[in-house]
Amino acid sequence: MTPGAVAVLEVAGLVRAFDGVRALDGVDLAVARGEMVALIGPNGAGKTTCFNVIDGQLRADAGHVRVAGRAIDGLAPDAIARRGIGRTFQVAATFASMSVRENVEVARRALGRPSDTRSVDALLGGVGAGALAGRHAAILAYGDAKRVELALALAGEPHLLLLDEPTAGLAAADRGALMRVVRTRVDVDGVAVLFTEHDMDVVFTFADRVIVLDRGRVIAQGTPDAVRGNADVRRAYLGDG
Image 1 (cartoon, rainbow, N blue to C red):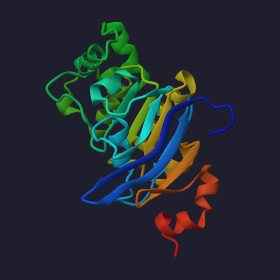
Image 2 (image 1 turned 90 degrees about the vertical axis):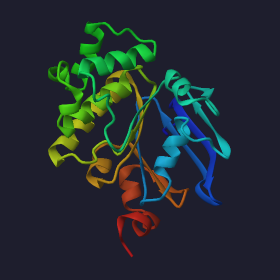
Image 3 (image 1 turned 180 degrees about the horizontal axis):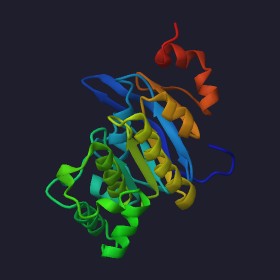
Image 4 (image 1 turned 180 degrees about the vertical axis):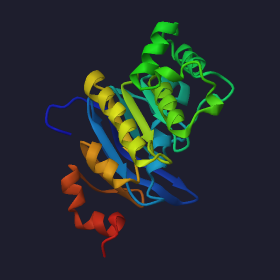
């Protein structure tokens, strides 16, 4: 982070093992208010495990997580969501039996936010999904489902967004459009964003900083240009021998 930046997410010494193998091995990272940070690395590097520990789906074996200055270690996922964390998943997750508007209404009620039509439609409009409000979620095109999932992640007006491969399965033009929506929420609302992504064009276009995991450890972090030129990163992930 830049000097003087306000940390929304602080992760210190995070460890998580499965059958003795450390998926996370002393991970330290931070994301500031109004900052968009990419967490990249090869398959199995620990990216999704890191997300699952931050949002309470997994418990860390060691280390600490703080959001907006408050410890969230050991809290259940719903309690963590109410502390100001929104999340999307690699496969878009919506309530298929409901309309798009009903999806957002339910999410906002669950998180203690106003769920009147005006506030819900404003949220959908903000992610470019206003025209989908009355549509059944089960019949959405995949790109539209990704926008609705983003609206669900924003339903609690979070401090922090965790976006797990937000552009997976999207055409190239749709990837840029979705990430520009996220960038607007960062710039306008000051949301902090930590996202994983395999499309390096997306990473180097939209990330303010890049953090690289390999075998559960942070091996590099910095600006996109600095990370792109890092020899260890190129060997571990970008394919250079």
